[in-house]
Image (cartoon, rainbow, N blue to C red; front, side, top):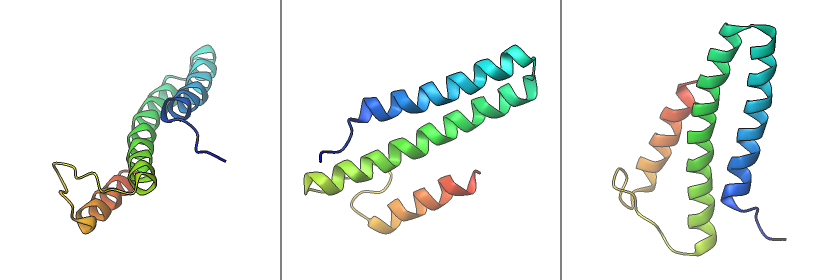
Length: 86
């Protein structure tokens, strides 16, 4: 079984949040709309990081990033900081 394509995963995330946002909009719940917007951005960023990790692990070669170089501890710190935003 092959992993799902990156764009398909991101599109699914978009669909889930868009539907919830539209429900909140119809209900006139501006607070919920703002919460959903912030949650979507946070989840999208975290998902992209996870997809990058998946792609790196499945490609068999390290893909250094400007922020972390080839230091796995820097990558772990980045993920830890992202999860603290919740």
